[in-house]
Amino acid sequence: MTLPRRVKATGTKRIAVFRDGRFQRVAGTVLLWNDSDTIEEFDTKFERHSFRLTSLYINGVELDLTVNLTCAFDPSATLSRDPKKMADVFEQRRQPVHDQLEAEVRRVFERQLQHMVSQLDLSGNATIGQRVLPILEGSPTRSLLLKSLEIALDRSLPDLGYKLNRDFPITFTNLDLSPVMMDPGNPTRTVELIRRHLPGLNMAMLEDLIASLQAGDPIDWQDLLREGDAAIGWHSDADPSQPKKAEPTPAPSNPPTDHRLSKEDLSVLKQVPEVG
Amino acid sequence: MPTTRYLPTYRQKEARLITQLAQRGQSLGFVGLAGTGKSNLVSFLRDGTYLAQYLGEETARVHFAPVDATTWQQTPDHLWQLMLNSLNKPQSLAKLIEEAASTSADQEDTLNVLKERIKFICQERGYQLTFILDDFDDVLRTGPLPMLEQLNELRSDGNRERLSYLVFTKKLPHVLGRTHQLENNSKFYDLFRHHVFALDPYCDEDARHMLDHLNKESGKPISRRYYGEVLTLAGGHARLLSVIVGIWAQSGDPSGDRVAYFGAQPEVQQECRRLWQGLHQHEQKVSMLVAKGQPTDHHKDVMDHLLRRGILKNIDPIEWFSPLLPWVLKGE
Image (cartoon, rainbow over all chains, first blue to last red; front, side):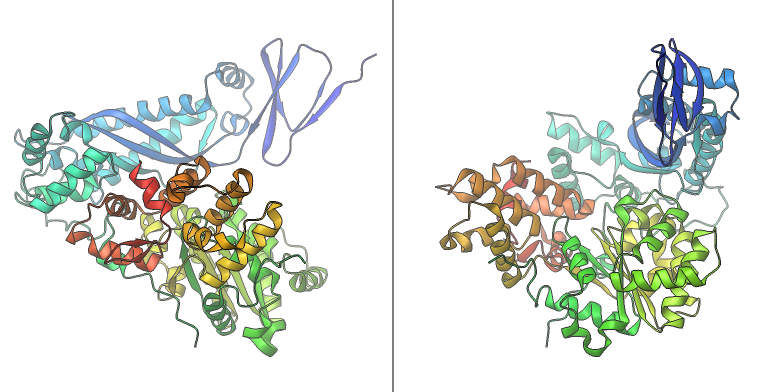
C-alpha cells in the first residue's frame, strides 16, 4: 500500500487541491493519496499592485495612468467557502493573476469614469486641463472617483477571490498625456500641439517639456496642466467640476507627487555637521 | 592578516550625530542613494564595537534596534511584529527581553506586547532605545497615517526622553508620505522633520579601508598603484566599489579608457540605473539633463540639492561623485 504524501503550507500560504483537474478544497495541510490529486499553493497576504491602464479616454482626451491598490487572494474568506463559487474561481484561474486583476480594475475604472464624466457639464471649448480634471490631484471629482472605484472594487473583487484592503488607499500615479501632446517625428507639430493645449506655458517650460518628451523623461503633467491653464484661469467658469457660484478651490501648492520638487521640498535635506 | 570591515572612525560624522541624538532621545532621518552603504551603517550601529568612543560611560545604556522594513508585509500588525523582533537583535537587549517576557503576562496583541517591552526597557531600566527604521520608503509611502502616528504614541507613552527613531530612506520622507500629507498631519514626522540629513558616499578614508577589505577577500587583489583610480571610479559608493573590485578581480587590469570600460559593464550599468531609479522623478530628470550637458538656470535649485545629496561634488564646473554615473546616463 502506498503511503499518502503530506504537504504543509507555511505562514500566510494555503493549498488548493484538485482531482483530475477539478477543484476539491483549500487547506493548510493536505494528504495526497493518488496521482490524480494535484495541488496549487497560493499566498493570502496583502500585496500592493500597480496596473498601468493605457489608452483611456476622458472627455475625448487619450491618456495613460497607473492605478495602485492593495489586495489579497483569499477565496475561502471572500466566498465564505461556497464550494461552487470556489471551484469557479480556482478552475478559471488559469490566466496570470495579474492579468485577471488588471482586466477587472480597468473594467470597473472605465465604468466609474464614464458615469462621472456623464454628470459633468463640459463646455465645447474646454481646455485639456479641464477635460482631464476628473483625475487630477486637488480636484474634488478625483476624490469622488477614487471613492467610487474603491466601493465598486470592494464589491466586485470578492467574486474573483480577492479582498481589497481599504486601509491602504487606492491611488492614481504617473499620468501621461504624451499621446495628445506629441507627434513623433514632427517637432513643429509637437510645439503647435503643446501651445494649443497649454497656452499658459512660458518659453522655458515649453523648452523643458519638449526636451523631456524627446528624451522620454517622466513629466509632471499635473503641474504643467496647471501652469498651462494659468493664462485662462485654472478654475474658470468652464471648469466642469466647480459649481458656478462656488468659492474657487485653490490649487494645492504641493501636488502629492515627486514629479516636481518645490523649493520647500529641496530645503528639507541638510548636510551632516562636520566633526569638531 | 584579515582586515576588519569597519575602521573605528567609520562614518565618523554620522555616528557622532546619531549617538548624540540617541542619548537625548531625539529622532533623525537619513536620505541616502541606493547602494551608498545604509545597511553597512545599520550593521555598524547594531554591532556596537566602536560606539564607546562616542557614548563613553553611557555605552551600556544606549541601544539600537534595527528594523528591516524591506520585509514588511504592509499591515500595522506586521510592523509591530518587526519592531518586536528587532528588540531581540542586539544581544544586550535580547537578554533583557527574555527577562521582561518571563515577568509579564501573556499578551496576544502584538502592539501591546511591544508597548510593554518598550516600557520595560525605557522606564523600568532607564535605557535609551533607538529603533533603526531601515529602508522605510514603502512604509512612509503606504501608511496608513494612523499606523505611523502610533510610532509617536509609543514615545508619548511615558518614553519621551528615552525612545527615538533613526529613519533611513532613499527619498525625502515627507514626499514619500505626501498621499497622507505627512508634513501637515503627522506628529511622527514632526519628531525628525528638522533632522533630515543626506547620507553622502563614503569619505576617502572609509572608501580606502573598504577597498582594502574587499581586495583582500577577492582572491585576486588589485595592485595598490591602482587604488586611486578605483576610488575615483566608485566615488565612495559602497556597491559600485564592490562591483568594480569584482570585475577587476575577474578580468584583470583593464587598459585604455577605464571609465568607458567599466561604464560598459552590465553590472556597473545595472548599479547606476538602480541608483538613478531610487531618486525622485524630478531629481532623475535634472540629473539626466546634467549628464547630457543640457541643464538650464531654472534647474539650479535641484542641482544644489543634488550637491547636498552627494550625487554631484561640484556644480561649476560639474563634477559627479563618480564619472560612471553620467557615462551610463548619457547612453540611456
